[in-house]
Amino acid sequence: MSRLALAGSGAEIDPSDPFANFATEQLDPGRPLIASRQLRRRQIVSRAFESGQTAAALLAVAVLAFVVYSVASRGASVLSLEFLTQGPPATETAGGGGVGPEIVGTATLVAFATLMAMPIGILAALYMTEFAGNRAARGLRLVLDLLFGVPSIVIALFAFSLLVVGKGYNGFAGAFALAIIMLPLVARTTQETLLLVPQGLRDAAAALGVSRWRALRGVVLPSALGGIITGTVLAVARAAGETAPLLLTNAFIGQTVVFSVFNQSIPNIPTYIYAASTAANPNGWARAWGAAFVLLMFILAVNIAARTMHARSLRKLAR
Image (cartoon, rainbow, N blue to C red; front, side):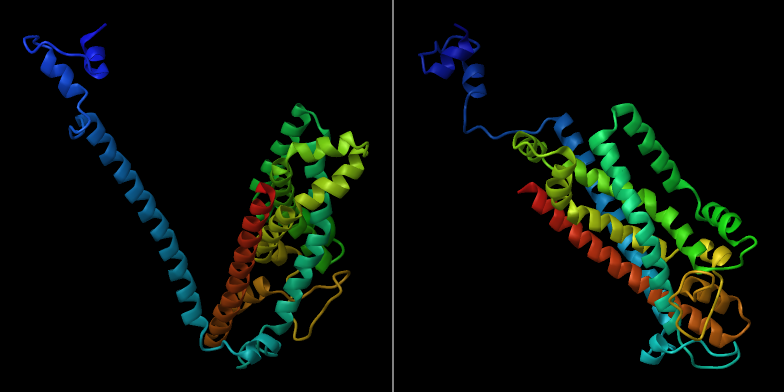
């Protein structure tokens, strides 16, 4: 038996043994731990990375706060209840007016885009998760990722050439372009949510003799409903702030509310901001900043709601 083992077992150690003190010191539980040079180096690197991450997070929050403050301070002179309910002034040089029809028009366009993108995105996610093989699923994921990275101006040109040339500006063309932008986000978020649904639920439904499609409709989809809604809301937040697709397909500012998206243009906030900011009129600049603040607050509210629903959905799936 080694001297260290003898020391640890409580056996008597010869004091004349030169290794006796060494063995006793090594096994002394009351001896203070002394950090080695390598351990101190690792602690320093760890603290440096933690400090860098904290600084990056604070910087991101500071940038967001600065943007919100800048937009709000420049548009504060026009922000009022009338600004949110009235229509734009008849002329750019006139004072007053608001963005009421533009708010309704933006909501209408995004709603129609959601009606087009959401079913297709969910069905694509179901196919990738439940029916496609590995190769087909990887290919479809690649297509969706590429579509997500396509610049919005390219999608706007595609919608313009398909639905505007020879027909004129119309709200359906704008909603169609926004739906293309929303589709990959809805599909990929839905797919990730479906992958979080426990496989045991599918196996239990199959053991009970339930058909695969009925199990998906009655078990899998309800379990992933929170994540699906979260992805859709995030897609809505992104589409609401897009400007290029609406400038090329639905550039219109109106004094009245328009709900029909077919064969006519619909007033919207991005087009209003562009038109008011390019007008050589101080009142137009203030109204543009006010409309930008309204759009920014809408996007922030939608993102916060989406994050909240996503957290609730994850807690539900974890149970």
